[in-house]
Image 1: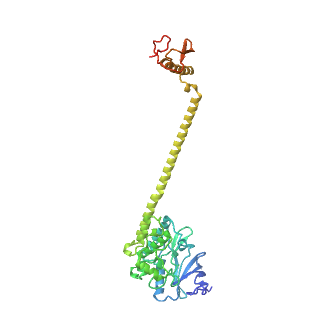
Image 2 (image 1 turned 180 degrees about the vertical axis):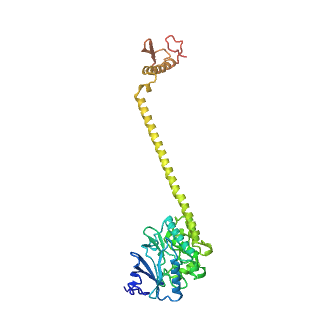
Length: 407
């Protein structure tokens, strides 16, 4: 199979050593990557990384050294290397083919990750990079395109995303400056190879996390030079510049990881991981148990309120029933008996009338009057005297007719 039409950097035959080439996966400034079957192992597909034929001398040697270093790494979050060598004068590296989507497809404007999900992914990548650093391997090109997200959500660190065309800000160009400008540390942007180390990967991973949780890159520009100038002269803005609700502790961790000067960053991935773990534990403590407590308290409160409401309704029903019973039961209305109540009421009326008849009796001064007698009960009667309009006198008990005499 001649792939020269699709690959200006290399032409691979349909059979390349023990590999049967299937298709071109991607290419960049440093080379190309192909999908191939490994005929020595049934059903095992590999990604063949072939350096650019134009890279000569130390460039090819550098590729070989990186391949040798990668072959030493065995970590669940690092793509394994199966084979390294030269076939027909062509250097190659065979790595496991990972089915999934690059992280670059899952980040960007409007596609930021929830804090805890981003923490989980970055912690796994940081652990993988700490393992690589302990083996003396510095990645130097950490970016979303070089992280494959498997279907089960597991991140796999790759490096066959490669550089793209020269002049493109996303390119990983060959030369003194290595990495993608968006994710370069200050020492990388300046081409200070002696200063590039684990803290450089810390910076790049911090920028990757910044993009995951905000959906934005801290520095953008129209060209590589524009971006590198911003890295050299500026500082990474706070994550809340793009997302107001980010957790303050997480923002502080990202800010430290992406500090401009290497002495202000985390010295290694372990420190970065420890800080992320502390943030996650704090969030879990504040959100998980707190939410659980709030739900439990809410349930208890609702139960108490429900019980209180039921008691109120119950008491109200009892009171209503009691009132209804009292309304229907004469013993509540007349606790001393109906006859006693009637007698008391009548006595009150008669007493009032008697007081009036005794105290105030108007009469004419000439004695002209009329008498009215009303029987009330056995042996009891009441007399009224009507006096026509005229001069009134108040009476007293000295009047023989029982009419008070005038004064």
